[in-house]
Image (tube, rainbow, N blue to C red):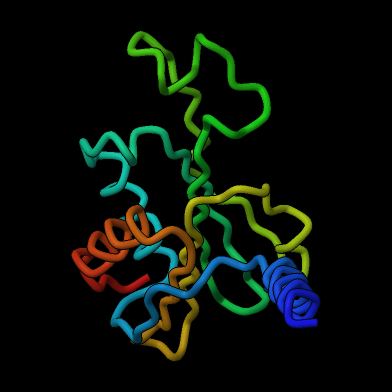
Length: 160
């Protein structure tokens, strides 16, 4: 009788763990001074200049959402993107990386979910509050997310 109840309890716990939400956890959220588009571009520039090996394999995709006045930076690990071969693999020291165009894609926030590739390392959403402040939210992996947040905080607050 006790063995059966232990098995039922174990199966229940496993099923609860399997139905947990698959969203990336929120790591950071804060209100900052500056323009959403300038802060996003500055963060990408600093991340690309970073010599950290963990960031070398990331590809950054910038999206602007004009309907909510926001920008979002997605960091994708190119090892897991379709179409990565030995010639452009981060594991190859002689690889030629195909970086995404730094110009943002402009879309609506409603279309956001249809355009997100699975397996992003982090997503940094910077949304305009008023003429001088923005709200920044970063969700995703802790290690690369911390580095991205540090670079976001280093970006100067410029007018758009």
